[in-house]
Image (tube, rainbow, N blue to C red; front, side, top):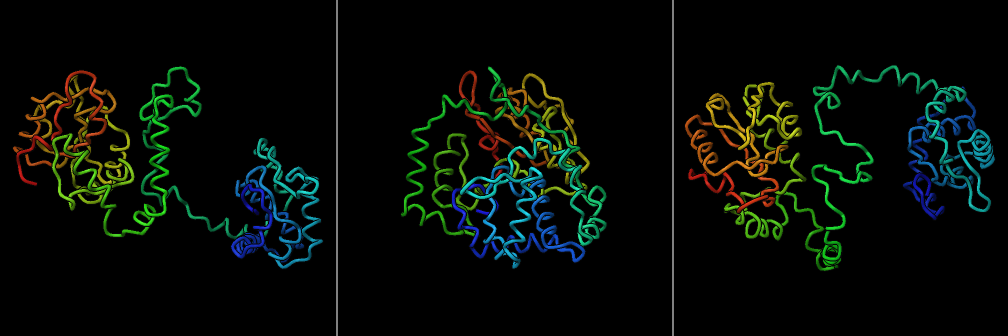
Length: 350
């Protein structure tokens, strides 16, 4: 294929790939440059921007010439020159491929790009690039986040949150479930876009098998399936929190929760945790919402005892604040029986 590694080169003839190459070529059109130079500019930019990964095949000269509406010899000469410059490698009876070693010297390669003159249209476009540092409401790179080394799996004891032990993973059971879910009859059930509701069978499993184990009973219309904890927190923040809201949270706490709430309000109230989790000491009286991880405090892993959970619910009722309970990893009890979820202890109607 033209832009992704693969054994087939005929795929470049498809209308989708033809449109892709035509649009890519249109971005580098410059009447001051010859067609061969424009093709070189297009390919060099695509390679250095990782749009054409190292080792990926290029369409044949005939296929690319047809897609771009140029003479085949023009493409042949462009390919030959790029091969001579080290951007492409030619393989007998196979065609041209992106040199997998070209990006190892990425800085040097980029510094060499001016040898391929920048089209006037690109220069003009670059002058109109928005100042994103001024426009972005939040600077994600400036947030405090969990940082882990890229090669953490090579560590003899990788104590990292949320990473499973591959030797303990139920591979055979997982494979069997995947095969069943991908059967023709099952695909017909889950593939359609449900739009306004979640998968009914999944919701039924949650309300009858998952929540009851935590002492929580919910109706079908009280369950929303999200794409992970961060998605759930964003939905909660969008629905409940504005610039005037005060949100209390544990200190230390789950970093993504803090970042999500901080994107909605500057009025965050960190409450230092102790050996029993979040203390109930009167500091929560002025907050509107409280985010808490009582069953498995993040990151200390302590469990809030039953007496403090009951005290927290009484405090929330007395001072009229909403408790956002993150009951993650409640099943990970290091000693004794799991403590009931706050929701299961709440005697007030929802």
